[in-house]
Structures are given as structure tokens and as C-alpha cells.
Image: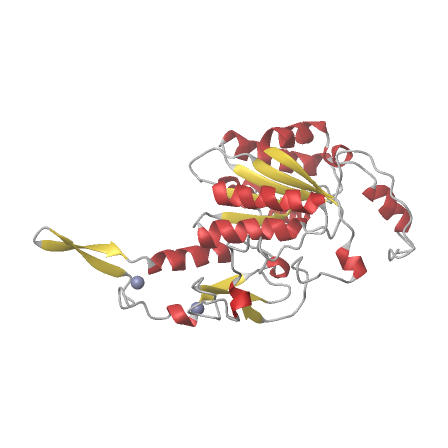
Length: 309
Ligand SMILES: [Zn+2]
Ligand SMILES: [Zn+2]
């Protein structure tokens, strides 16, 4: 029965990696609170023995040789893609391995995210994912793990946006005479776009038209979009939870807002488009942030300025 032996059981505490700092990934990720996630080459990759740092290797071809890009250049390109993804520092180190699952929803959502990331091919139409559920259930962690895997492991361009912040950028653009398309264009073209906190905006006609334009253009171009929202598809009754920290000024408002459905937040036109574009994954879990446990596993730890694999 015990045919699979855990490395740890053999007392190999470093997991048998040649480089313990990056665990042989070749890169390390920096998280600085409030800034986008940032990666750099690990020191173990500072010198490439294949190309000597030139970025090219000579491949024999008949009687001469042709110059070819060294594999180490892929690493730089992938690190650049990760650094351009605008992933928030809170999920800089999110991975499928460190996503802790406590209930069946989380197990199903994790496997959907992992399967998506591992099977995704930029040249093929791929259905996206929409995670919906309670705050603190790990939706952003899973989105971060997908972005990290696609950029750093597969070299696929990704962008992460919080929808409300995107709307602020568009409004700020108007003030400096930049049209909304100037701001949306890179998001329309990136191979994988991740839109977090969908439905948190006020839901005005203008806000909906911006969302509709962005996702319709991507859909028509055959590009994949992932979403996360705190709003459920079905109506829910939010029970009063004595442990829940309630802002007395807006507690009632908060509960009413949370019991709204995604349909009420985004409207039927956008909801039916989301259904066409995505597989919907429910994630209802206890609020681990409120309970003060498992923060590390959910990528919610807030240690500053650290390098990590
Ligand atoms: Zn290393
Ligand atoms: Zn090289």
C-alpha cells in the first residue's frame, strides 16, 4: 500500500531542491503591501552556463552555426509577464498548492481553477471561470494562482483588475482627455483578463455599458476572461451574525447589499453574457478572515517586503 514515499518522511527537509530559495523555479516573488506583486530572477539564475549571460547559444548547422535564443530568456519574459499582470501583493504567493480547502465548494473551485490553468492554450478558445461566493472564501487566491501559473509557468500574458478601480481609471482618463477605449484597449487585447470584485460598483447605466463593452469585445475576439464576485446567483437570506463586525452607520445597508443577487447587481444582459463566457463556480465558506485562522493558506497574510518562491 505504502508505495508512495513522501520526501519529508525521509528527513529531506529541503524537499531535495538544488536551490532552496526558489525551489528550482528560477524566480522569486516579492510582496510589498499595497503594491502589485513583483518577481525577479533567483540568484541561482544570475549566471547562465549555457549562454554565459549573452542570451544566445550557437547551434551547429551544417558546416557553420546559427544563433538561437537561450532558454534562460524565456524566464525573463515570463517574469515580465507576471510583473505586468498587476496582481495585488496580497495574493502574490498564491498557488494551488497553498490553497487550503475546508469544504466541498473549495475543493471543487480549486480543481476547476487548477484544471483551467494547466489546460489553457492561448491559441484555443477556452471557456473562462466565474467564482461567486462569500468574502474570504479564497476567490482572489484562486485567481492569483491562475495568473501566476499562466505567466510564470506557461508564458501567457494576463491582467488582473478590480472592476471599481478600472472605472476610476476610466473616469480619471476623461479628465485628461483620454477616451475610455485608451484605457480599455490593453484589457481588450490581453490573452487572459481577470476581473475581480464584479458587482461592487454602484450599477449605473454608464458602469454597465463599460463592463458590457469590455467583455463583449473580448468574447467576440475569442479571448478568455475570469471573474470573481461576492454576489450569489440565487437570493440569500443573510443571518445576523453576532461575531460579524458591523458598521452601525451602514450595517443595514451592508446586509441588504450582500443579500442582492448578481443579476440585481449587473443586469440580465451582462449576466447572460457571463453565462456564455464562463463556467460558474460557487464558493461559500466560513469567513476565515473573520475567524482569524488559515490566513496563510488563503494568501491573506500581510507580512511586508518579503521574497518568496
Ligand atoms: Zn534559486
Ligand atoms: Zn542562457
